[in-house]
Image (cartoon, helix red, strand yellow):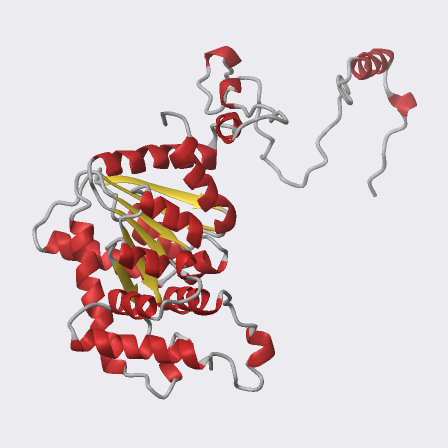
Length: 356
């Protein structure tokens, strides 16, 4: 049976050393006690010979010059941007904005690969403004972009309540949406043009009430290439009576070849942004990259970025890391909600440091 020794058993010198150690703030300092461990021939490593260095001699990643500044009541947007801490995501957005301004100056592509969430979070007006300023020179969207942007243009509203409609089988049954998308696919296939261009043209011909808020309409009017990449069965229009799988596939494949040509032109300073697509567009972009290099073209000095509220595997691998590997460029991963990060990027492009 193990029992503790009473304090009286300690010698006078032991007691004095124990009291002195406690007075100095060191628990049980000077107390001589034998190890009660069951591990024979094993003692905790000694720390007596650890090497240290002066704090002032060490390089550090964060210094006070990078800290944020308080915001005053009368601060301007430019003041606000300058007051942000030059750390992590803010630093990435600032660096990305510099590269996007350079791409514009060099007349290199600035491609926005977007998912439907970009439209659903109300960012259409910001994208349209950036088009007008030369910071959007091409758009690649998945099928949900076509659905949500078309509904915004026609009805001024989108984003169906799936939970409320799935049970009765009415989810995705909007007649105008399905007819527009499928008719545009057939028309595009018959005229050897891509799905993005064909849908944008068809939408604009309707003279929709909210045309001024439609990214597709704005892109078509500005002759900015808009490409679309669908997953058959993944969009609501694919189960409508007038769906034509061959037309959808043919026009989407035309758009793949069109996007690949735009990606080819990125060499020497172009930018690709992936905003809100976790699977489809990262895969499409990666195939464009390998196609261009397979054909013998150079694709260097490029910038890529992924914006999303979580960083998924495919965007990180297929957009941020792989295309820019081996010195081919620089990739950024910016985490946050699109309705916050994209307006912040736009503000930095327009009002940030270095903008006259």
